Length: 263
Image (cartoon, rainbow, N blue to C red; front, side, top):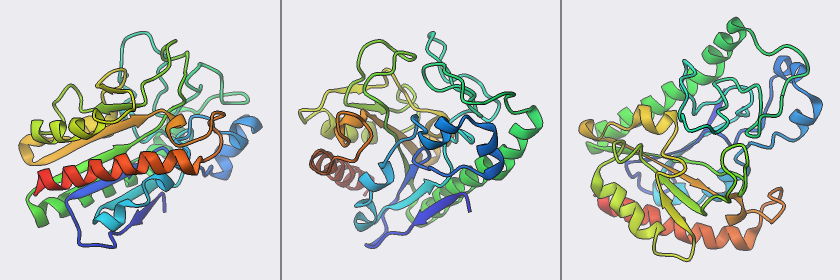
């Protein structure tokens, strides 16, 4: 299985929480091709995001989390490797060959087109098909559904931008992937705390948000990117319980507001 499903422990609400970049596993055949230090420290991983959000099922939210690392295949990229941005930042593809700063991940040859297709079939499509299934089931039950795509990133990534990232970045593909009511509901919480908040910059949602968000069909999608220092230590290698608890309070308020808006 390429994903984990965590069912709600309270009355179900019309929200699916996706964590496509918290996976840490590498298949043996991929592991052999990657540099050993890459496998031992897959630095672009959204470390502990699944742990940070593990309160969600108690709010009635269904969670889907990836098991395999994004360096096997990136579940939040266009399957045809169409770039998400064209502003000069380092763009990692469907099967990344470098990290965000442009450093090579592979010992020698990078994956062939056939190997990329194999990974697409084995890891990428099953995750997306399951998300689609969950959203359609939710819409059938409630008449609407919200996909919330949860991410994190190092505070500073020069390959993307020189300046430190904001604490919290809400992405909705320039207000096209979700209704205005849901966007406003999220902003009212995220922009009311001491955390530095931005909307659609420098991230406006990846392939998951852009492909699943169809508000005209009552299927909405939001992406929340956050700096890892919000819930990890200053080295961005260890979970920081005190920081995480402060962030979890904000996230709980966010979801409570979204649930109220959906109802």
